Image 1 (cartoon, rainbow, N blue to C red):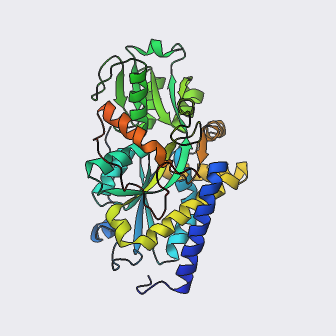
Image 2 (image 1 turned 180 degrees about the horizontal axis):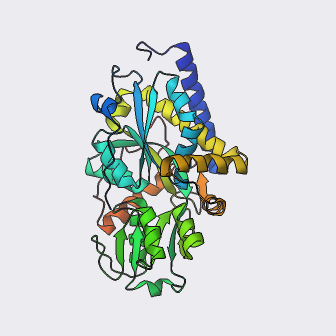
Length: 372
């Protein structure tokens, strides 16, 4: 690690990274609670905030959380193709990763100092931020739009047929969980935060939701990709709601688009190691750019390799193809959508109300309402 001021290589990379990220941002506008296992003895010996290194200097290590989902393809690609590691290594920072099932678990790890940054849905990021009165984390980039659906039994052909059913979401307080609760409320259903009411909501690990649906023990689920596609293609589910159809573009200036995955960094880590955050954002921008431009076969192969590393098994080609068809990749975090997401979480009883001022890192994301 370079312990002094920025050298020519680092300064040049930072300038290039910022320029590339800005260009990609403009182009994108056009174009059951699980506590993670520790990283091991080495991680336990390190202080929170990425290990030794003076304040303002690059961290010696960045610990990154992500999910083995198609909606986390920028993380999968960034790891598989080395974009993240190379950008961080230019400043002498190592990369370590940890896989999670859903956002609230990743936020717990951030709060516990077990990781420094994470790809997660916007709703857990909002919940963490308001619960900590703005001290917990910063949103530094977008990653994914779309890629979430409510899939149900074939005989459930309208919202009116959901009364008395049992539906799943990945985790209480997660992005799909709040989307499901909010949508049910809009249909006139009463759903309590404990899951009871006109429709029972059971927060369930994604893989278990698939097994429960196949066994007839749940009637449907609001899931991120590839899990929605797996229920459709492997278990005979039908799509009742594609979340893209609910977005008229009023908060994002892009109909059908909404933030489903964003990149966040622990606020203390960001303050201590701004150069490391700049490198992380540049690596994410490279991964998103590659996803937008790569040959379809090469893109699918890289994502599937990342899913295999994260989840232990590859996806069937037809599942991955369907999942990618519902998903877009962009560095835009759609900050204009976050006030509405906060309102929905508060109304659902799973998010504390509060101000979102300061949630977005001003050095890496635009002010709310800015269109790219």
